[in-house]
Length: 383
Image 1 (cartoon, rainbow, N blue to C red):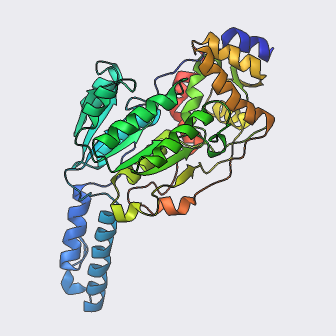
Image 2: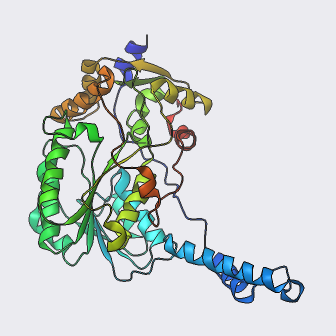
Image 3: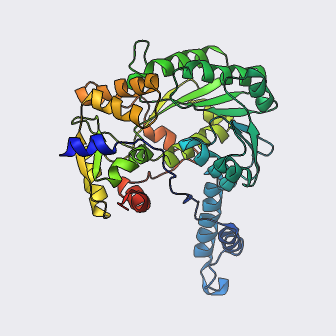
């Protein structure tokens, strides 16, 4: 019955995700209060005449140290005039990265590259403070060089197209020719990125090799499976079934908003801070190890009535094609998921997460799947 429901309802469709933005809960009012207390050595409710000198000195020193710590964590960013180009600005991570930079790094100029500046998402990004949307195409080297002119650093990501390697290498070369000094690339699971890797893993490997050879400071980020990938299956979920080619594999899924924040930290940190990450492969995983049954349980807890369907590779591929995915791309995606289905994927970490968490501006706590599911439940419930 589950397979029949799957065959009838699997229309892979990108669904508008929640526009809820993640913000630092800290504002100028908080800083003013801390600064006042630090200067006068007393809290807002305690007279300095009522407090012993040693306590006043301790409190003042403590508050001043907290202000410095907040400053170093990137709440106030001192580097003025920094220009950052975001390739793939309307994508899952790219759009969140543009928004995060705008909201938390007001002195930075952000250029958001998109193929269509008149799209709804591009217009939304163009309205953000410090953001300029620039039209360009990964296949058009001239447009890429114009977009990269005068930028200091760049971020590159691209959809999993059959010529993804060519497109991203065009972007990298354009940035290199225009003098960019740092590129952060979003890749895929590290295990997949090898010369004979499955699906788009092989293409990412080729891009990574090219990036390593152009002489630009760089870091390659390998996120685990995104929470937001669940939204590609919105239509079958509404019909009561979640079809997946995971087998018994469990993944430490991660929210793309956390990846965006990590990417922002890597893009904005000083050269001295970035030195320990330069040329490295950084795998970022979420805090929870979850499989298909776990996904379904979380969905049911927020009122989404759904069953988990363990399907076969050919069914998975046919479903992708039926949903409008080009056949070559559907083949690549299926080959990647086949590794999960067969249990051959090695998802061990490459770079210690603790090193990245210490970076100014990086998230100290990653989002939980339950919170994400609660956000998107309204668009996954049956009509």
